[in-house]
Image 1: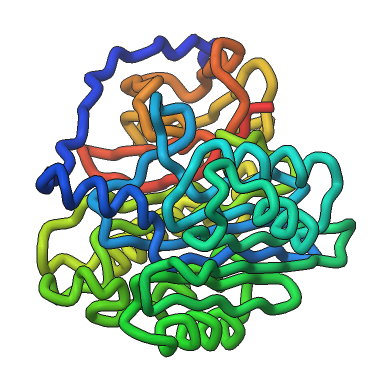
Image 2: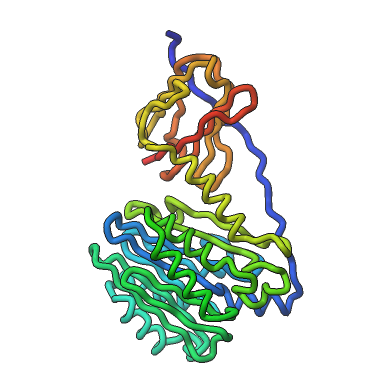
Length: 346
């Protein structure tokens, strides 16, 4: 057996996505209305907290981006907050502060409506859930000045809300799909999005023949970092006629396929092992070159951070330079993907 050797860091090219650009007036309108239909929910058993939604806006901009307008905020272990319709960052920050302080979803919404940053709570829409030590609570608010059709539905551990909708049945369908679906919270959220896959669900997108232009789904485990979630997928700015919820479903299905039957199991049918997982310093690999000849490692944002041809049975990856989070490890043979799994860096 050969001695372990280090796998070197690979350089990678960064690609930027081109966003669909509308007229300035339409962009301003869409930014104010983000997002059109959405859901926030909690799993009282696992402590997972999730969020999903879609809009006829042409992009989903995430936290950390300068000037970001993001309606979905998940505070792992605490709850989720959606502030939509005429989004204001300071209203979102205030909601965050109240949740950290221990306010219930109802108390947060009452505070927000009394202390709106622009003194006009009538144009806001909120959906909030919290974990509350395994006893979830939810609340929602729809201002009278939001664009029609507008409404919200709240259950014990979820809240569904929307504006600029084609009708109430968008929200009803989301709730029905969510409640009928068995399995983990992520599956239920993705099902809720399928429930909203109605042409013109966001009424502005009816001429496109789609429900929306952009969509997202996010789930946090209790131990996650706010900007490094267990699940964080989005589809931004699809072309007319391309259904973003279908594209999100495809992306979600691929994400699920990377989990395997148990992501922490050290062996698999391809004779590949990687230990320890989760890891803190070094990940020890055992790979037969006859089974796989190349390995790649993608960081939590999908960027290539390691790649190496496999020529020895034993090798190792030094994980110390990398931040905590979930990494995707892929193995190839003769250019074909043969195995994908997750590696957790603690």
